[in-house]
Amino acid sequence: MTRRIVALVCVLSLAPLASGAGTLVVDANTVHPVSGPPIRDGRIVIEDGRIARVGPAADTPAPEGARVVRGAVATPGLVDVHTSVGLAGIFNVAADRDEDEKTATSQPDLRALDSFNPREPLLRHQLEHGVTVVQASPGPANVVAGQAGIFRTHGRTADGMAVRAVSALVVNLGESPKRTYAQDKGPPGTRMGTAAILRRAFLGGREYAAGRTRADRGDDEKPPKRSLGREALARAAAGDLPVIFVAERADDIATAIRIAREWNLRFALAGASEGYLVSDLLREAGAPVLVGPVMQRVERPETLNASLENAARLERAGVRVAIRSGFESYVPRTRLVLFEAAVAAANGMGFDAALRAITLGAAEVLGIDDRFGSLEKGKAGDVVLYDADPFEYTSHVTRVIIDGELVHERRP
Image 1: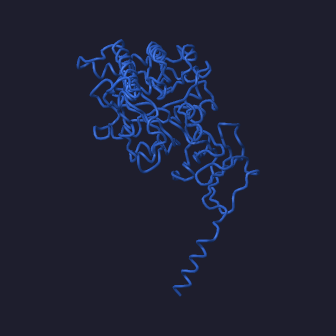
Image 2 (image 1 turned 45 degrees about the horizontal axis):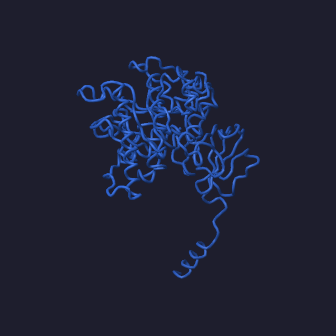
Image 3 (image 1 turned 135 degrees about the vertical axis):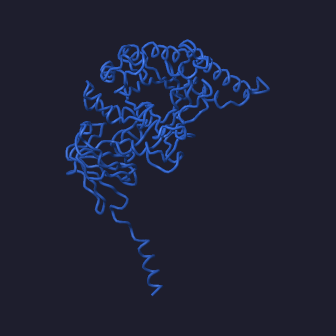
């Protein structure tokens, strides 16, 4: 009897898998690929974690044996281009606040990867509202905050969830660094002080790179002492590492562009509450703007001119726009880009542009649009299903699929 069982197991192991094994089929009344027009009665076929086919269900047969899930509306997984989620925790206590190292104004060697908590409940909160990819960033306290990273919202380890462990160098202008250090009578106490710290930092990075180059050529016997911070600054000054300038007020935005031009940086603006006041300057600079949060509270002088129309006005002016959740000091420590985009859509941006700003447009800004941001053949099998219009307040995310795996299903 034992021999018969062993023989049967061997035969089964050698038999070809059913045609639908490892395949997930997603059907929806409306599919928004984002890279093309909406598809009515659409179908998405995901094989081995990647999108294999997208089209009308009538023209896109479902493989035999494949699992089928359905929804009213389907979009790509949402992308949050700038957030503290993963570093800032839901409880807002010292134990889970790891986004700001308030010990020095310039800390380019800090990496979000080393604070990223895969088990942080806020990641699940984001995922259940359709977010499948985030750029997690050090916070607003320091002038040079550190290095951001791009992560999935589902996984077991920070390294395993990392799409790009280091994605950008983050710097902060405006009131936040002043509030952090001026109370101790340390720099920066003014916007001039903040700009001076930045210039010294990039100069140090460039000098460090030059010193190592001279040593490699044999012009100097001794290379400069190894510095992880200066290495990051050198990469930024060489254009190899993008720089995100977090700036709200129009004059801070102008300062960011001025410094970026001085050092020939590859850069983006984040926040930009007064971006619409200098949209011509932003368009000329050619830098993308990570707008938001769209529902920015008028809580301090630099956000007095915040407008719900900011994203729409920038987009109409020809500025590349993505929508971020940003940073929040109150529980639960994060906003949701789905809701921020909905408000932008209702305030002049329109459905298509707002959806693009949290999917393909966001992925393009991060340089990951070869894998994420749209429903196209070969891209990651990240799909979000809704029970109605995604931007309607009463609608719900019903299912979230990451790499072809159903990772969230809303209870009725």
